Image (cartoon, rainbow, N blue to C red; front, side, top):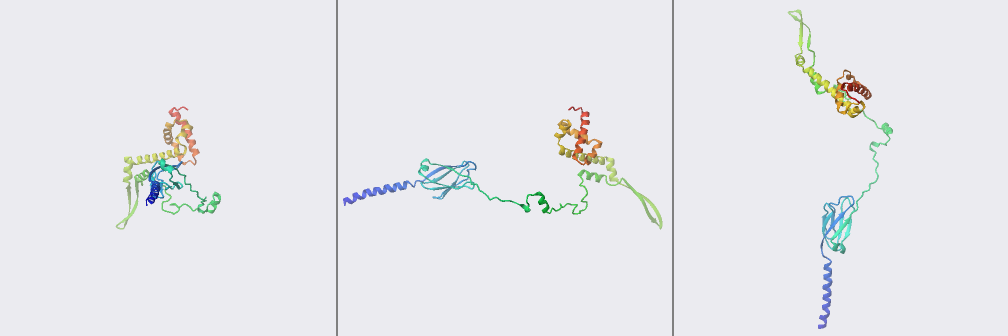
Length: 284
């Protein structure tokens, strides 16, 4: 009986020793790691412990913290990266730090040739094949007054103030007790007369003329720019506005708006620049 007890004692000691070693391998560690990439953002990368099903995500710097143990499988997933799996080793547990380099996920698409409306890319050929319909306008629809130019607000005010004739008269035939009589009548346009006497009509005409000049001045600046006019005419840039005002005040400026091309307008400006420089004592 004593011999049996002596044999069982070392067996029990060996069993407990092996069991203690096995439990030591199941030690859980709160592992800290960092995800790195050469190009893309490393934030919000999903980190999954496939063994325990626990998850976390990386912060703005790519750092994460996750509970792991030896031989756990850790997976890193993000749309912009290829999925990567890491096995937890003793080295990782001892250092308590994991550094992961992720590879960009480059999606390769098959080449696609887009040909809208069956175009070939050859302009001459496509122009012959495509039926170009005329643009729909008020004139093409034959709407009333479609060809009448659109009036500005000032022009409409002038039309209202100066509409009609000052005096309208005529002869009117009638009968009185079966006897024919002839009558004369005079119709005075009071509204137009008052506008003329008060000076409102003249003021509106000046405003219409001013608006036309401003529009023409803006068109000239868009065609040539103040800088080009200054460099070619020799007039300082800060005096170009005054030069254009000088041109607008000329009696022969009215025909400039009817010129066929910009070259004629340019010639007019250059000719007037000499007069302007002489009048203002500008030296080149």
